[in-house]
Length: 135
Image 1 (cartoon, rainbow, N blue to C red):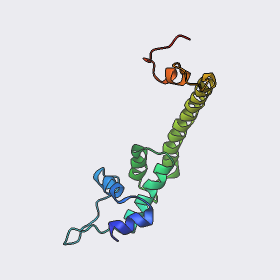
Image 2: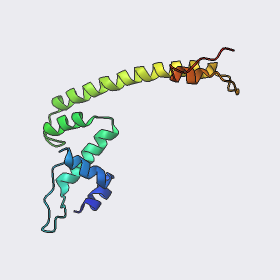
Image 3: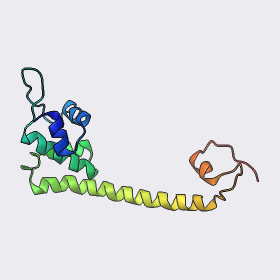
Image 4: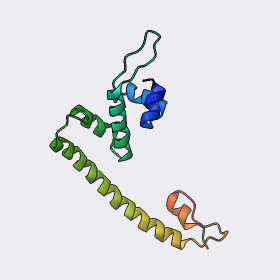
């Protein structure tokens, strides 16, 4: 199949397909005599696997680790579980950070009057070097 067809079947942009080839996430396909790339079902499966993994927030290094384990058809559940468990820990840490951020922003936004005044608690919070105005 052509790169356009691969892109259409997997929902991955053509430039992203080329990028994944350059960083060796996707094996280089054979080329025709005229230099056109020719992809097969294995390329499609790996690319779909990478796309779905990215949608779930796995990093490229984590996906590489999964592919090194043999890809979607050969990795053992235990090995994949270890990678997924580390990813789950990262997600939980991000959730904790997002909840903290939500509390801080909620408090900061509540302090903002919304009037046309020179002082703004939101800008003060975001820009530590912003001169503070005296009321």
